[in-house]
Image (spheres, rainbow, N blue to C red):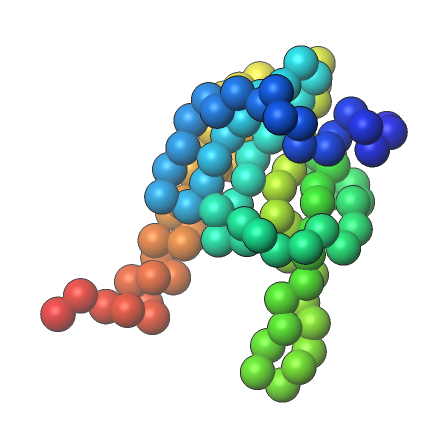
Length: 108
């Protein structure tokens, strides 16, 4: 897969958004972007072998200076995935972040 097919293009159309994600589409891909990672520099592009999608990864450093690779956006090929597959992953991401927020910032 060439990088030109998976780079975010200015011709992307926003399909759906949540508190923690955007879903875009272009001619070839559904693109799931993690809002919490926006602005993070892309360090590598790899294939997620579990979901079988191409992902842009960045690095977030913890308090000890250790770098952790994190997904910034995932590219779901339209020929292999339906929109519902992407939406399901987006909703799972949303649920995970909402649960994390509740643990770290409980409402009084």
